Length: 302
Image (cartoon, rainbow, N blue to C red; front, side, top):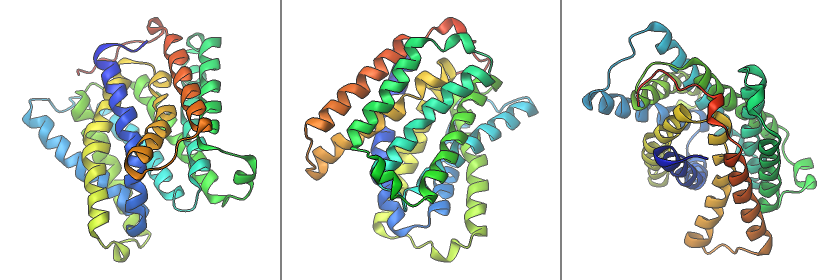
């Protein structure tokens, strides 16, 4: 079970990344998706890099640490960008179910690729399956909705969740020696440069017009989604199983629904409440099944 600072970091990720669903939707209305995502990561990376150096964190000493952090950033944040792109033509219910598959892929990679097969217990498998079922109930997902969805959405979302899962497990496996915040800054800078360049190469530059709502969404995502949320995710990932930390994907839709109820007067019925209960039970079961003995502490500092 997560405890102390790690639990706090996990809860920050759950709440803040649950709230970013709305900001991404708002930004997607006026800003081209790839450039929108790339600039968010690049600006956040620059700010966090300068702040980390000012706070006394040292630059990574080994070339392999720069390489590993860059790979992690490209995998994780390319996966996130896929979600931003897919949300343009994917119903919210379909998108939510595919996004939570990230934790399932993470469990697969962490178990079979990273050589930790003994760490995936029957109780953890049950928790992961319960979380997926809870999300389906929560969002009211139906097979008919999937059948009528634009095929590009599920395809891009599957690619994105695979990339995110691979990045999370690679981070746990490579143990780059860097402070948590400086490491997160390097990851965002590397991804920001590549994704912004891709957006420009795709011809999104002329379509980038920063409206008031778009600017507000971008600022919110930079501050709360990246500077605080992504740093908290990196901290939690440094100290806990990638699969256990990945259960934030189950909690994010719950936060989004609660925010919709509190801020937009959206209705919550018995089905939604049942889905929330199932999801939260799944997170507890998964966390209680985690055995820290199967993980090595990374060499990097906090």
